[in-house]
Length: 262
Image: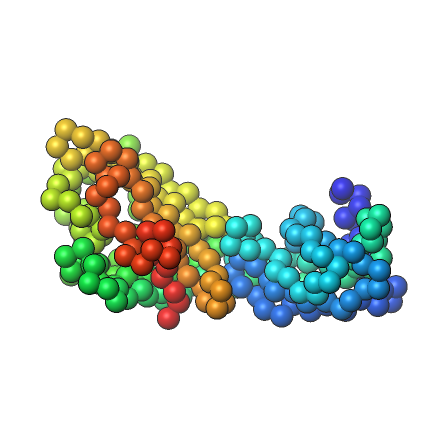
């Protein structure tokens, strides 16, 4: 496979040998929209990003995404894209290479609750500001009484922090928005922060009364059908938290909050 891709890349660089034309129509943070000219006899087209096979499409298709919400590319990164035309016997007919750079997730995102189901007035709006840095994503959230505060990443620690501790004000303000129960946590700790091309995952442990439970918050970064960047936020919990988390009353997103760019 490596030898094949190397040969294909070398051939693509020799533009005079090929008649195929292609262009990047749109660059998103996690994908490119690519179009190309028809190659006679092509049964399918194979798409690659930096040597990795991304998609195979029918020969009648002349545009497609390289990368997707389900198979995302990394943001702010240079890519070499290859479109290869092949016949029914998988023989190369033509190919072309393109250079592109994915976009950024940095920006302001806002969701407004237009329903009467708002967790007793505590979840009427969600506002995130993302800073897509080379070393990782920083997410700020507009919190009641505090304004914009960093909610991810929070410091990972093996030690518990008391819920009423002054250092826990961001955690308290953020938890109020989504806590539907009357239970007040006694302490918490951040167990892990995971980041990849698809987004950010925060894993926290919380104690309430004699119970200990885990909550996992997902900030999945997607491009919607209208081409808008969105933060798809959801939280899942174990034990007491499993049923005590406020979910999006709009059931199109299966309880997650689809927060689009402003």
